[in-house]
Length: 158
Image (cartoon, rainbow, N blue to C red; front, side, top):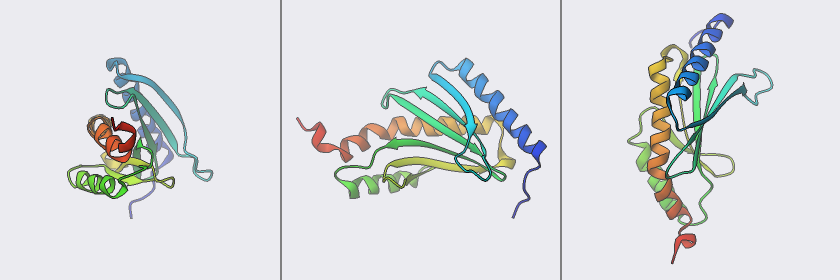
């Protein structure tokens, strides 16, 4: 098991993430907001950021970044639990998982669909942050409409 990060190493990573996010927002008109807080974990209170972006297929895409002692976790909400065609939606998600690198679809406690992943803190660079945000954004834009139309088919019937 890898060693825990020292407070100064965590501080360096926090600075890297914050600096990169502000640069990303300044250069990218799709970014609507960036905020910083801590995770809901009452013991560790890990540093956490969110990046809210405007999308085309999905109106808003919000990516959460949570910096732990060993990994940077990231996630975005894709869609609510499907009301119909649940097995077909699940099959689509599993097929898409097979082609994703560094992220995977998962189901939350409320059966909503998320796109999540994590990387070791040691791999955290500006280029990797760009890849993570880009992958989550592009994947949600690609899958949102087909999944919504399948999971809520009767709402789209003419």
